[in-house]
Length: 563
Image 1 (tube, helix red, strand yellow):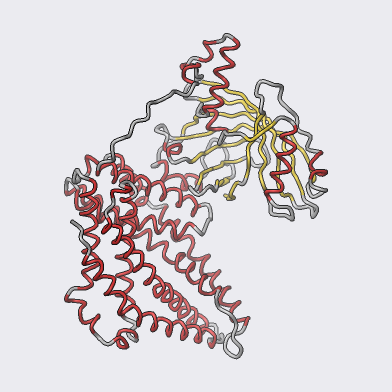
Image 2 (image 1 turned 90 degrees about the horizontal axis):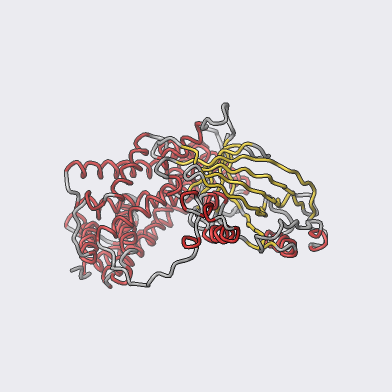
């Protein structure tokens, strides 16, 4: 089985690393917090953690750490990753027999990150941990304090390191806030000569990627006259390597077209992997963001890659990637639709004689049941061979962009050509086939539900254009023209306006499905019918507004000077 939580912890180390290891007096906590924090139990644990990665370091490149821990209360397989917004996620998987065997669920979770390569041990860390649990006045275990003596061995260069550190991690929410817990613990630590640590993780330090720690090790090696231990070949930095070098500050040349595209693809691929991991970890908020990333990649492939491929085989590869991204969005759509339904349902209040509190409770219960059925669909799609091939293919395109596409040398010209394609994808809705739609009486347009499909197509075109321009323009900065910005802003306006009716349509569709299920169960449908009628009438008003607004916005796009 697996479990997931978001780490909220702070790391500390001795202010004077050359002094004897300090011993904080945690008995002071109760006095400092007026009895709101108490140390209830302290245990000593011995743990061996083996970190693994692929031969070419794919986990490290994705900023994902995988370890097998033996010993301690939380022994098992752990996956740690940062979601890009400051949250540190941790997934736990039980050990299997033999302990070196990768659990099937963990293999599936990592497959798209590792490109299905085998994992090899990279670092082994031995830790003697003195762990103390803190409770509040109500007996809730709110935090734990870990005093660690650490010894590491890196397989890459056979280097060994040793240090002491302290961690304070929040566990459960109690009557005392997290900030109060950290503040009280830090006062005790500071009194013992211990302060915040700049080291992000044990693995980073064990790999020799903690510059401040390496500098201290180098300095100590010199003091002891053991320069051979500070040589690079033994995994330690000599004084020259440990000392920050002064580099002349020169303005780098602006990125070319290939660099802009490669950087955009790389960033989106990284987002896709991290949001996929969040979804696998049970973070349902990742559904919408994962769909956005898949759509962004699809838009970049369509407008910025496909027109410039060097061969027919490359074109087929792009088309295959686009298809898989579309399938992924489709698989995630039911869960995303239920997010929209939940937002609408949270605003529903009982109405005397029409909608009772019991009716509202039943709707929320049905929503929870639907969500449980929808959530595995996206993960099942991510587990397919086509999803694995997608990650491999996208990685190849991003890494070898120059050999895959032939782009205009001038990146400003390249972005402008992309912007023109986006404009064309939108202004097509002003052409002959759609003229009758915009000139018909507003009331006729407003009361025709079939027009929702047209408005949805325009919304999706605006969304694709916005996502593609946003991804590419990040690498150009101030070199984006005013008309290119206007195109982006108009896409934003169109998308924002049309998302309202699109979301309302999702809510109405869910209510319709719920009404059918209620009928089969011989349940009262009056409240559901009321909500459906209210939602449908709201859509009439939205279509009435959009009948004039949408063509006006499209005409703005048509007039843009994209030269």
